[in-house]
Length: 278
Ligand SMILES: NC(=O)c1ccc[n+]([C@@H]2O[C@H](COP(=O)([O-])OP(=O)(O)OC[C@H]3O[C@@H](n4cnc5c(N)ncnc54)[C@H](OP(=O)(O)O)[C@@H]3O)[C@@H](O)[C@H]2O)c1
Image: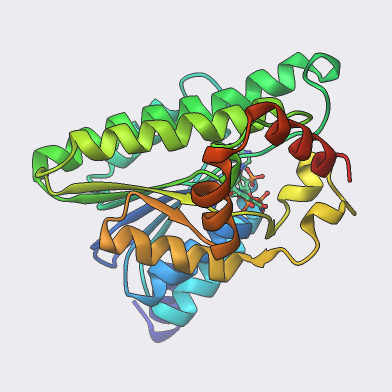
């Protein structure tokens, strides 16, 4: 091999970075934007390997390039629509076939949708449940089982403050997040003493593509939204500590723990309805 081809092969290996050792490996769903992208950056900054999952492969490629150059960590990409039946098992199979072990699972991919339940396109809400609930449930079961066998592992589920509230005019989304909160709380109890922890990250409005995708572009609800980086960092730290619930803003902690338990559900629903339509 002459010098020119040696340099070419080295460049190729660097780009594919398949020769780097996978350690402290995190699998992050919804890593192509918003909170998931920031979780990837934070994990890479700690020297951890990454398996990034989303549909938009071009965005994942850009992130991979950034992280490889900046942190020299192994980054593998899986292009997958997780709302498709069978997709979670395909992700798991790909990870196993490559001999990778997932130490951190970030179940983060999700989307919302504005509108009265009966007026919304049913298929869109079904897709939302498949992604926000079913994919999360399956990936947690598949990778959580392996973690429990090894006696070590951490899972962060991106839920929402919506998970504590009734959600008129974004009803299915709120219900999916209520599932994530409840499932995380129960699972955290079952996992005690196993070496595996599970944390629900519960942010209020965050500045990401979420609002646009959910049909809230220009809504007052997202005025003063938190940054994706700060939200991801709080979630990451809570996960490291093994906290069960991480509500990222004090005002929401106060609302959820200090006010909601004393408020009739009908009034809460009326307030939320007004906010969704602002
Ligand atoms: N932003 C907020 O105000 C807020 C508040 C509370 C909770 N959350 C939650 O935070 C999580 C991350 O959302 P975000 O705010 O960061 O929004 P975002 O910028 O829209 O990111 C959503 C991510 O999910 C991925 N995704 C969407 N549909 C997918 C599918 N069918 N298969 C695979 N990946 C899919 C997207 O990637 P591709 O499009 O490339 O597939 C993207 O990477 C969600 O679970 C959301 O519910 C957000």
